[in-house]
Image 1 (cartoon, one colour):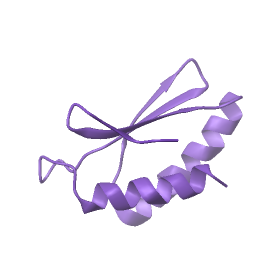
Image 2 (spheres, rainbow, N blue to C red):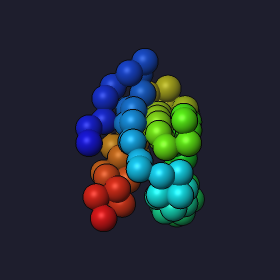
Image 3 (spheres, rainbow, N blue to C red):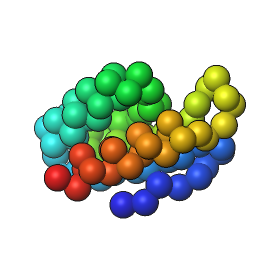
Image 4 (cartoon, rainbow, N blue to C red):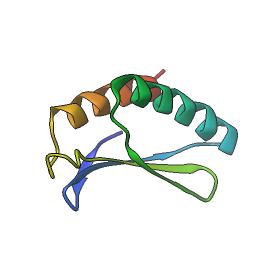
Length: 79
């Protein structure tokens, strides 16, 4: 799993086996983002692909908040 810089944002695409697995993982990510008060842009494609994009709108850039959240998201996904 690797984050890519695309269009000025950190982006990660995750493929799941089922939409249920995607939903449970996204719930964990959403709870983490709420705790951090920093929320990714999220896309769901074909019921089993989750695309996350991190960017700090206030700074108009990728910041440490984004990098920290990306690392925390990786830990959730690797569980």
